[in-house]
Image 1: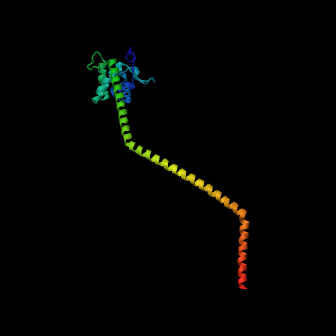
Image 2: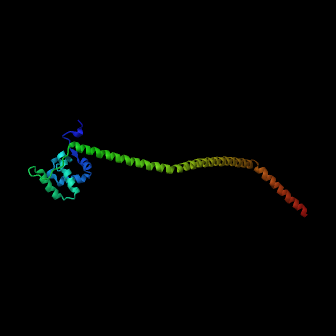
Image 3: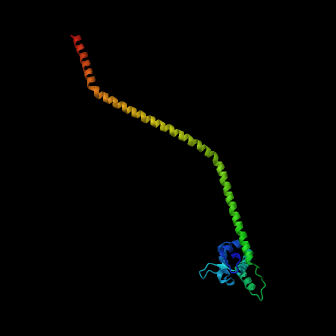
Length: 207
């Protein structure tokens, strides 16, 4: 047997919120407001989580129907007192079976999954449109990346040439410095002799 349809299975607050299309807080509020008509399982006063028998769901469904008519809690309470008095009852509670509740919950769960699937499909469509919008930009970015890489290669080549020229200049400077050290004395001696000879020639001409 499917465990969902076992006779001793109770229903949780979230399940009833889904069944009645209400918030869990509303279900808890109804449970507290009409606790005298519900089983002890529907109360949280003993610290347990609330659970609901099929009889509780019949009463809650009656309450939900009256609330949709904007009926006040006090009047609903009077109707329930009449409904539970079998001898003089003039109000009948809804006839609900466990299978009815389970089927409704399964339909609600399917609808929720279908809704979530539609949300995912819509998001996928949005992402696809955004991808198409960005695709030309991606191509342009690829071109720019290739151009940037080419510029980087050119810059690296220039840096290499500058470094090689720097090394050549440094070598030439060292050669010149070595030559000056080797030939400096002879060079300056020759310049001194040339200057002295020029001065001597001027002296002879003045005599």
